[in-house]
Amino acid sequence: MLVIIIVIIAGGGVGGFLAWYYLTNQNVPACTTLTPFSAYPVNMTKIQSITPLGNLNPPAHTYPTDHMYFYPNATAYPNGFEVFAPGNMTITLLSRVNYNPPQTLNITDDYSIDFVVCRELTARFGHVINLSAQLWNKIGTFGSSGDKVQTWEVAGRHYTSYAKSVSIPVTPGMLLGIAGIGGAMDFWLKDTRVTLSWVNHDWPSEFQNTVAALDYFTPALKAKMVTYLRDYLGNPVVPANYTGKIDWDVAGTVRGIWVRGDYTPGQIRAEDIGLSLVYSNYNASKGAISIGIAGNSTWDQNVYTFTPLHTGFANRAFADVTPDGNIYYYFCEQFGTPGSYTKVILLKMDDASHVRLQFVNNGLTPLPADPRSFWSQSASVVYDR
Image 1 (cartoon, helix red, strand yellow):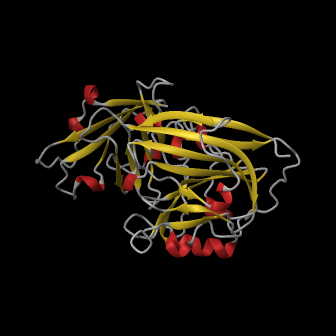
Image 2 (image 1 turned 90 degrees about the vertical axis):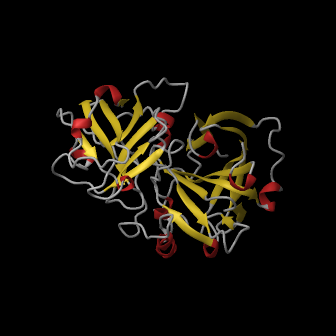
Image 3 (image 1 turned 120 degrees about the horizontal axis):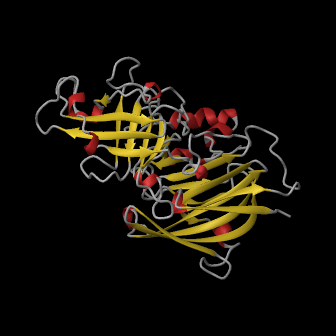
């Protein structure tokens, strides 16, 4: 019999109802291969692209996202794509998530599928638009007695999740549902043999043990799937076949994830008012500043990118920025072209646990090549970790 401990973490991931399963029964087989997935998880002919780990989309995903996205070729296949079991596994949880207001294309409900691959590997498919007939035949209606119900809110949208514990063994290639209508399908994978590290583990605890799902497919399948790793414009990821990264923290520097100084646990997610000073998941050579709800609608809830330098105070690589008393400035790609920048982000570390961020908008007037004279302590926002 499958014995599990359910760990529920509110407010994160698809629908906010993360229940990762840490197996305690020795009858559950340990993982015997590094590539247990032997079937494609989706109909590959109907997808447009795959997004690496670490996507940034504040405020819901201010921190690097702990799952990959499978985007549909919506023009050619408006009815989405099929979702399949990628290997031998046991489905342990099926959830229906209700959205108010609706998602894109007026979608009010979708589903997630949690499954156990082996003792160390647990996974989830999210934003599945409908379950297959095989799964519907094995479960009752959602919201029935015994289902777990959870509600939360992110960025003005109200969510309600109805989660049904099940134990359904499936084999590679079994049809599980349809996804890719109105957006991407999410694919989480957690491997308890992999331990990630942050300076402060309080906020990213739900991201622990995250791995890139594509790395667990047989070589032939992975070789095809990595060709779909592209950005929103269809450009291949840099470096080639890059599957992403989410743990960027370097102690004593600004690199990594932060939360606004007035954060109060239990009132709002840290990520909603967070700050990420990391690298782009589409181009790992590009620095990325991801700002959640910072209290200034002219610049928060956005991502800004730049090419890092290792000397001087302009666009300095985050791992080089320390509590040295200096102000560093970032002329990001979204702020214009060299010589005509009218916007800049200023950073200064107070100490190893506090960084100040100030956004300067000089209207129509180009800023000087060195804009540090615009620094204002009182205009900066303090972030902690």
